[in-house]
Image 1: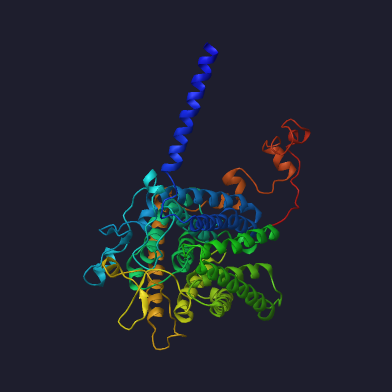
Image 2: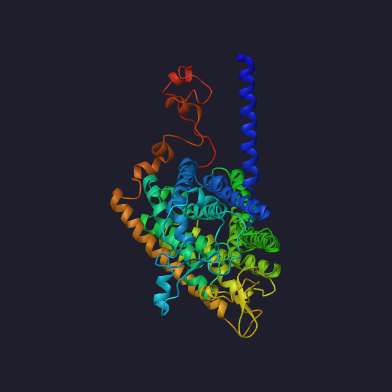
Length: 540
């Protein structure tokens, strides 16, 4: 009887559980607004971009610095990535892509912004979004809301959009780590990253991507040539100036510790960029495919141009691998602000011009003030700052009106499709139709797009420089210096982290990590503290 009763209750529970599951399945279908293809591609693209930071950029930077700084570089990469993640979902995302901080809101499923009287009022009314967390179930599972102009209607959740935007926010400060490595305190870095992401990145993102002032005025940045790369280049340069130069020995003997691993990191960056630019149409369509192809065309052109200039124009007359990496980055960064709005020929031209101009700047401009007086360790001001600026300006030249970006546009008085502004968005007659970008080559009598690109560039340069300078000075006051003392800089990783990327046997025994090295701490090696440290090894 007891056994039978138990079986009966078990059967009842199974039936009840089945009923609950059936009800859940039938009551929570795919929302009508969800496109699973778009959602899958957007999450995949976001993962590609995340891999560009970890491990891509971490491996690249850690491999081209002297071995005594390798652990410090990867440590700051992981810390920076984590800091941005927390800040982005607690307040940063809504600052860059949320409701206007002084008004605005959502109308008919899109984000509308304010249009003040006079350009000054209009600018400050549309400067930044209102901070707020993005952690509730409703926030994460609701439909993503489009910005007030130029964006396609989204067919995936807010969590997808927020994560996609996070990986862009995360890689930006990690890029300018290349300017300040070899002397910035770990604690200073951990303060700088969230402050900079909040005060610089979120502001620029809102202005150009989130429906802010420059977006409404027609300035364009497809995937971050301005918001990410130019901002990182300028900020890194200013931060390096405030910190001062590395030790003289480090500057004179700055040799890579592993070029093969640098190739691994560079390769991850290159192919990860398919998600960087291919994800920014926000749907899995022809625009995404065109952006991916253009990205690779520009990158290949950049690589070949830098190799050729190294082989023909330098005293050594040798093509170098690090030169190829620099050319790769110039091509990638140069095409980023224009990837979906130029054709293949335009992409190749951008890669060639960006790589050639940056090569000349690196080899000649670096010898004159102020560049000669600032120790930008990995030349981020050149490969990211200048290449990003060039790419944004060249969009105003090579923009092809036949490369349609399916977004929110409208017909003007002349019957031309132009981007929809916030005011037009709020009207009952506004609707989303494809719009395009026409550069000087295709519209020789109109320099409007080039003018808008120039205005936005000036803002990003000035804002990044001024705010970074202020933040670095404040952090220096709080920490009594944002730079390590020279005796710590002489040692590097071991003094800062108690670890080395390439420890030798005697070193491992001395610091008691024999167990981690597969040897017990009471082994003969660990009882010989006077063993000489071998002088061999890679790097410097």
